[in-house]
Image (cartoon, rainbow, N blue to C red; front, side, top):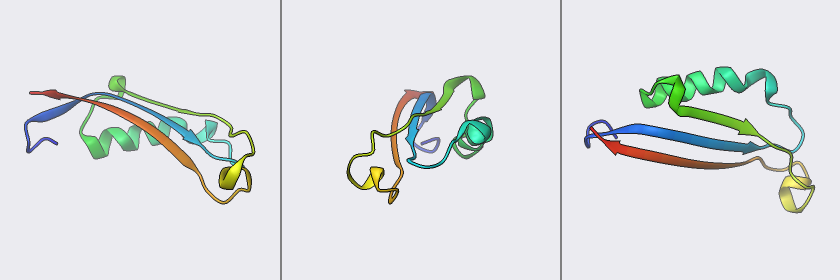
Length: 74
């Protein structure tokens, strides 16, 4: 991303675990995202929500993640 002349404008991620609360690790995960992406904490938003007990998520087999990034030219 940086080598191609871009920087992170915004990251919005939603984690959808079935059996684990992420409230206690949300802020540490945001810091890790920032370190890995070389971004400021103000542009990273991480949240978690529960799944509706359908398909493999409901059977506690998987965790889903939806992430949207905005990349901006430097």
